[in-house]
Amino acid sequence: MRRTEYDRSAAVNYALRWALARNPQYYDFDGIGGDCTNFASQCLFAGSGIMNYTRDTGWYYNSPADRAAAWSGAQYFYNFITNNKSVGPTAVVADIRSLALGDFIQLYNGSEFYHTLIITGFENGEPLICAHTADAYMRRLSTYTFSEPHGLHITGVTVW
Image 1 (cartoon, rainbow, N blue to C red):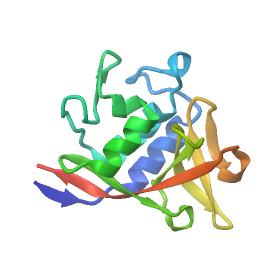
Image 2 (image 1 turned 180 degrees about the vertical axis):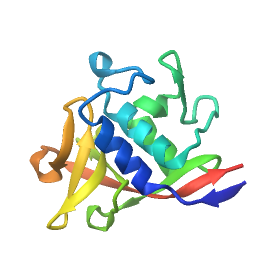
Image 3 (image 1 turned 45 degrees about the vertical axis):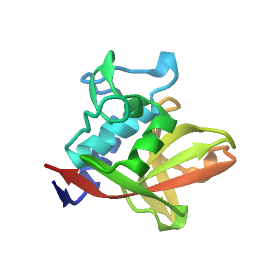
């Protein structure tokens, strides 16, 4: 296995293209818990190009019935991306002020992660995000209500 760069521009371009629409290649989870992490995973896949098919703890999507919990569940996404020691993207928890384009922010309510956002720009140092569920295109982070944001800085991608 070897490490490669995460293609931040591909992830951001995907996010900008699909922020206010749905890619028909993926199921829309809006009616059953929300589509935010599904959308974040699509963006992450656009920038990484590889999935992790490890049963139960991986990160992949083949269909609504054949996907990892980390693909569409905010807490599982966090667990995968920060603990991945195998194939696929990895991230470290980082201060919001140190994040870059294509990184992610997860909103935390004191007991669980409940919303996943991708950074697609900055305005006066503040992240601008794209997201699904409450669809957002270049929305300022400060317009959200949350108790604690967690930054996820993508450090690279492990491939075969």
